[in-house]
Image (cartoon, rainbow, N blue to C red; front, side, top):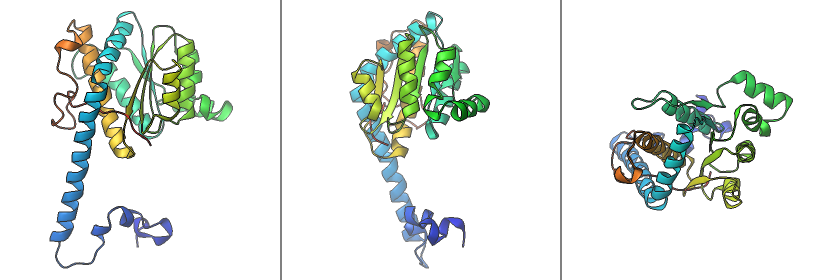
Amino acid sequence: MGAAEDPALGGGTRELYPFLYEASADPAPVWADATRSSEGKATEIVLLRRRMAEVCGDRVAVCAEQMAAAFAGGGRLFTFGNGGSSTDAQEVATAFLRPPGGRPLPALSLTTDVAVVTALSNDVGFDAVFARQLAALGRRGDIAFGLSTSGGSANVARAFEEAARRGMLTVGLAGGHGGMLTELSESGVLDHLFVVPSSSVHRIQEAQTTVYHVLWELTQHVLAGTPTGAHARPGDHADSRPGDHAEALPASGPP
């Protein structure tokens, strides 16, 4: 018995995909269930992106204009997050720094230097792992870009507080009801917050991916001299492939 099937581990994949373990000589029902599951998830994210486009489309355009202004003024982008959001933070930084097209822009993910992350976590505390880096590297006119599926990551919240003290443009992506990040937005610490209204971590992260790719694309258009209003709205291509930058935008949701 593999670890994924060990009852002591809670059933593993058996609990997530019970139809794969049902004894049956006919595989057709299994394939039908798998197909329904995949189609249902695809439908969820398309609808979520459309909702995000309706709720956040105009605000995303404004955010992109302010990010473009920051870059034009010599600002740099700093990204951060935990777990899956850490890899998203790295993707955001890479998209701006080494774009598939357009203008390369200065960007750094605060999650990539293992020596710095582990030193700060061990010597100062994990809650300060991003804030301390911004204190050392950030300056007025830079951009702090943080992601959290729940909005409840203390180290992300502290990083935004540090960024606000330094006069940086602050941009947050969260899920559910936004958690602590919603409080920071309401208090004026966060300049822009996009909350994906979903309780599924998977759908939240998929929607956040669309949001930050749209932000990247619109920022490039502004820097190239094309007003965001003259370009397709983020939701205009909600039915396009998941990797397309111009897909519909997502909204806010819980972890």
